Amino acid sequence: MQQASPEQAYDETATARAAGITIVPVSGRRLLRQFIDLPAVLYRDTPAYEPPLHLDRARLLDPRRSAFCRRGIVQYWLAFRGPRPVGRISAQIAHDRPVGVPENSGMFGCLDAIDDREVVVELVNVAEEWLRAKGCIHVHGPYMLDMLGEPGLLVHGYERPPLPQTPWHPPYLRDHVEALGYAKWQDVSYWGLDLRQHDVSRLGEKMRLKERHPRLSVRRVTWRSLRKDMPLLRDIFNDGWGNNWGHVPLTLEDMHGLKLIAPLLPPEAGRIIELDGQPAAIYIAIPNTYELTHGLGPHPSPLGWLRLLWRLLRFKPKSGLILLLGISSRLRFSAASAAIILTMIDEMITSQEALGIDWVEGGWVLEDNTALTKLMARFNFTIARTYRIYRKSLA
Image (tube, rainbow, N blue to C red; front, side, top):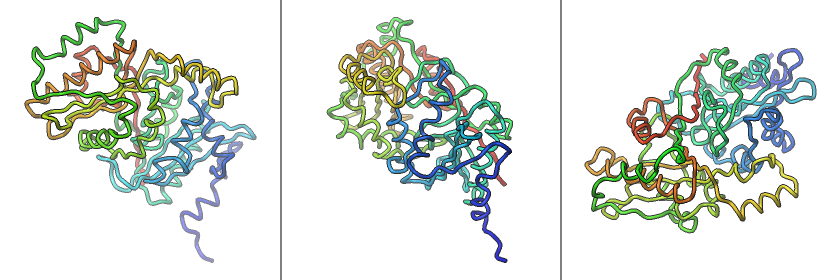
């Protein structure tokens, strides 16, 4: 009798889990839709949770649309207790290994579940089995679906209002994950600035050099110029962060979501800082789209879509997210670097003030990036939320 391969053995036992719990691999449009919408079902009675639109989550998770699925492989599962869905998880392997990640590593992600350790155990076990069958000896996560998506499990800032790129997780998931032998690898934080609590004009003066570097110039990135500027934004971002732990090269396809919200970007949404006419640093800040979709649910009714359209016509966001920020690596330790950084922060804060923004937030900042954390603290930014990336050996 021919012995089954590891992958064959896995396939035969995929749904044979703990008593009362069935784990189902996601296949077909119906299960995929259920997988994408499950957090809105599980956390619907949780005041801190605000469900994103299904269209937004499908852009990240639907294999036909996901940028990750063009640079990696992924498998999704749903957990059921009887007919009731009680959890979900993904396992994925990227073709390009992030900086600082060992070889033969896989990832888990999209972990959402009821407060039941048995459910989380079975979900994590099936993801680990799939990764072992693919030859992985290390696992890290969670992600949606990798470092360029929404990395980490929320461990601080549960009460913070929602922002794009900042998923919400219930506190009990941390305990369940750590009970399964997952150890902290990295913490990444989002830092926020409450513009209502500071004299922004004085803050700006504090950051401005007495005499701006004469070789520096600043130009705006608007929604009209965004398509033309995207390759430059990508290149400066990749160059500036290329040696950082966890870096994965950003592609134009990864920036597709930015193009979708381009009409919402005001003239002050981004800046390109130039030195002697050459691009030196960039930043892009986007409005908080949750202010538009609040209360509409993942699948708005026809009346909900009309309400969204009405909000769009009158949209004046009160909070925003610094989506991209970077400085050219060739200038990082140059004599002009201080002037470039101060100019960029000055432009960012004064532009957000001009838009009437009350709160601006940016991440993800590694806890061991002391230079950046000191700079944030110096200008009254504080940690708003923290996400933890875990790792475990599968050997």
